[in-house]
Amino acid sequence: MENETIRLIEVKESIFDDNERVADTLRARLKGEKTFLVNLMASPGGGKTSTVIQTVARLEESIRVGVLEADIDSMVDAERVAAEGILAIQMRTGGFCHLDASMVSEGVDVLGSVPLDLIFLENVGNLVCPAEFDTGAALNAMILSIPEGDDKPLKYPLMFSVCDVILLNKIDTEALFDFDRHRFEAGVRRVNATAPIFEISCRTGEGIDAWVAWLTAKIETHNA
Amino acid sequence: MHELPVMNGILRVVIRHAAKHRVSRVTAIALRVGKLCDLDAGWMQHYFDYLTPGTVAQGARLDIEWADVVMHCAGCAREFTTEPKSQGFGICPHCGRSGGEILAGTGYFVKSMAAQ
Image (tube, rainbow over all chains, first blue to last red; front, side):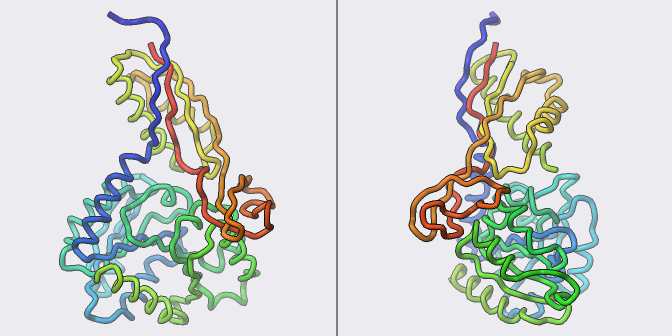
């Protein structure tokens, strides 16, 4: 019989609990398989695809790489990466603004993680939503490009707090924009005391070697 | 932008608990949302109302409590509460140093629900 009295039900549950369980499972599995998953986040046009291409071109050839491209509804990024001879698959999120750990797990299965040493996950271009969903990656990297402005850490603090490393891209355009690097770094440090910041230009190649050397050390530690 | 997946996540939790407690109608849902989440209360209700017709949560009111951002100072190791989007955000009031680890103020937590 239906009880018409209002009753209070204790729930005490985070909506991310399920996602975090799937993410932890994926992280543990990839650790066992010696595959380093990097979640790459940025605004649209920040340089995620270019960074993947420039990074892979400079990695040692012995490191086997796969790329998971996420996009709301297009194939453009995967086609661009595949044209460079890089193993890539496109995941369409069907209108979703981020990837969750289940989608990433499926993508990793399709890509075939076992023979790979490194997987780049190019998240949906967005500084809000991807910050909230753990993808199961071993490393969260974010790219901010000079034209976006030095105030972004204060506008999107959650994104800057969850990343383990920051790439400041398009430094070759610095003369055209009023971007204050000190102001940018001060903003980052308010929410993230430790993430290293690498200044790069995917167009000129400047600074990419230092980032690749840092990343290579991370891959070696994880996959040891 | 991601109201829909977030509200969907909340609805999933609500439906599961409603089934567990064998209730036929949920009238209100108490949420705790971190102040670092970029969602607006009005839009959350709007998207929730879009998702709920035909479910136990149809017409349910969202009662949102905004959770403060609490950080652990990287300088003096004390905890402090800080207001996002304010001038002093992320600056420790005890030692004046900028930054540290975020301990609270993120995520979406379903505290309880009123049901029939």
